[in-house]
Length: 421
Image (cartoon, rainbow, N blue to C red):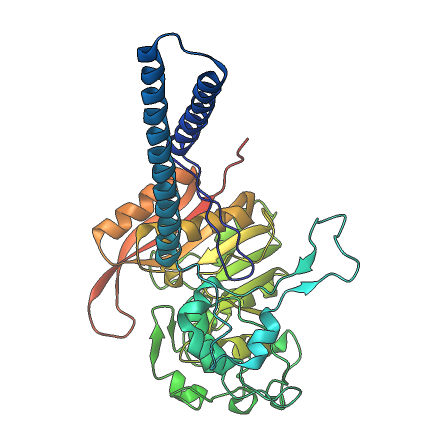
């Protein structure tokens, strides 16, 4: 019946609804007003010869006036209902403005979210007249945490609250507002030159351990941090230094075999949920650039990846990938790609992967954990919708890496994006 348009940028959403019903009622209202005026004009300018005719006209005029009043009432009710509906939609979707009038809102947050008029007025190229801060709409749901994050001394040291920032990101408050304070610094002593840095152990002293349970890489290597990271910080003694060059099962594809499928046209890639950055390290050995998407959940992944001379991207999978369309030759993802929730949420991620992958590029799904048969079936159907060519496709059982002895189903595939006209 109608359409909903969103205008997001200042943390708010405005809904506009136009219905066929309201248009028809407006025409009826206009018709009744015109008819009433015509009858009134006739009544005052003519001399009725027949008294009965005069009374009939007068009665008709009163009826039309009554109808006009009823139509006006209906219009007001429709307008009121539309406003209530718009408010309900905003509340359901979470698009609400951040209330800056509350006493507990940090001054820096108020300052950051203010609209700033352009000094020379309207910009001729973009058409904008003011600069608006970019803050995730879900920040409203975590307003107290956001205000805590923005409570600091201007030009002073930032609070040691990276874990608070990550908590906000995981709640959908992304991007975070900028701050006017200096981030905590840590001397990076003992960094190795590239490419030696790719496989040299990283010192415990050059990463931040605040907010983490473990305080050393030795502690982390004794834990299963995720399905894709079991001992993944051990670059010397564990299996990490053999990944992608030595297979442990039929689901493990070798990196050179996959690159050969790309006909030599692979130079830049994106690794989603890349753990400690080993896939990017293998690609770097082959003079190829890979950006590794990660968060510091239970471990300092970003700092570890950077210490290896690689590019970490601190970003959640709820955020649109900050890249232009069709720029990557290869996208690699493992079980970290599973965002959980409704199937539509996973579809949004997959469509964004498709957006940044160039035609003819490769999507490498590496040991993706299928929790049940339905999960595998849904994923298969989704991939088929994209029309990718299946260059490799293996579904197999694997014993849990945590040595629980439980057999689990994993899917590994190399898919080629088609050229769409």
